[in-house]
Length: 402
Image 1: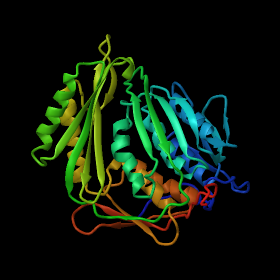
Image 2: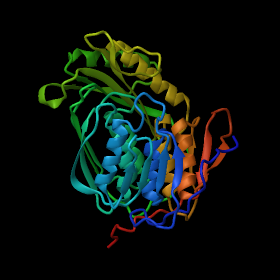
Image 3: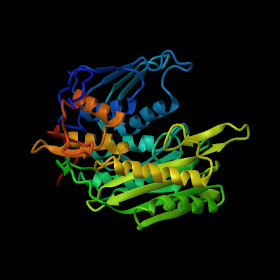
Image 4: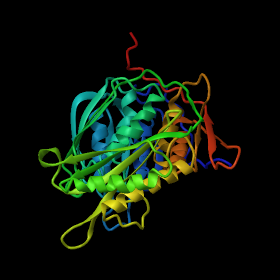
């Protein structure tokens, strides 16, 4: 491996993540709609303005999608002084970041085209560097679409923050479950603030000691959960006896109006590393067309509970076989926090084959923070790589330390 190419010029690092943006920095320019969430979050933290053009210019419906526009509105709610400009066609976005304020009592309704984790992951990147702790309620789809489920966010994503010293007063609750297409779910997320991120080394994956999971059902028979559990255990018990999957049946006021069911599995290793996999069923409407689909592979058709259980179990085994300290869905998050760490010593992490999101996050980190990762192929036949970097030393100047 020879490293990754960088798009755009490296940006000077902003030392104050919650402070005012430097007025002398020229905006970074990108083209296309891919990785818009990454670019907006890194722009907010670094204080570097960004211009994104050619957003689906030749599409039948050009410009920003509803979930992308909703994410921009969410940034406006938690930041003060941000300036957003979108042209008439919606194909060019100009974003000048402000100060990350945080706050409590915030409520945001998300479109049903994406899961709530699309917005939660963005909030998780920004909230630790806010002026005050963030408490927010999000409403929409809790399980479904191309994003990880809210159960994966609770059991696998949030434990990653503990490795970077963010664990106290970290709260996440699923208040109502909502499946596609009509949603109706609701979650509560509260995140504390930190002064700075300490450098870490996460190199030992460790052996898997247990598997935990959640089988959820909304407005369908509770037996669907038992069938998913039995089929998943039929695959996993050949490798590990300690498999415990909880059943969560929602009905009435506890869920939205759309039926759905799915499964989330999480492994924990002896060294405290987590890996996850999840899937939800493909439900057909009255016309016979698929309403929602999320499986282990693009070609899968997950109709029965047994199909869902087997697909998630096999996907989890595939993630374990890839080695690395995190699964492919969380590589970008780990790389982001490594780049924020103090400059007192390098941070290192061992990852499996880089996902597209992880590779692009490294390019964006070099553009916005001026931090470059050193990539070294791991010894042996594991197929993993060790990435190391000296963090940008981003500190939260708005947080009081006395």
